[in-house]
Amino acid sequence: MTDADTSDTDNTEPTFELDHVVVENDGAPDECAIFPLEANETELLTAWISAHEGDFVDLESMH
Image (cartoon, rainbow, N blue to C red; front, side):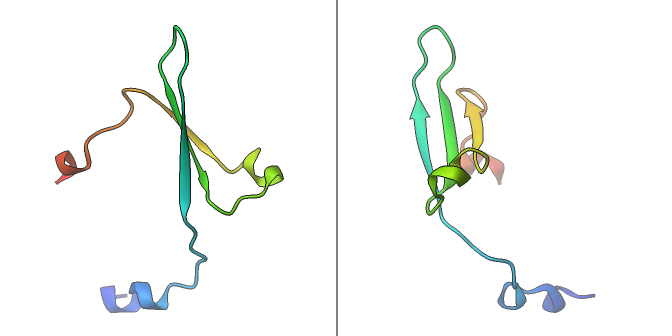
């Protein structure tokens, strides 16, 4: 298999946009919840990722 065989134009997986909200916690690190933009109320109960303040790195530092 080559890179041409797995190009993004052949990708049949669904794509979606993400949204986020920052939860400011008193006495604990702030949290960022990331979830699908179009998620309905039921999906929001299970389709999210949470990260705490300090768990992030600057995108430019990943080169």
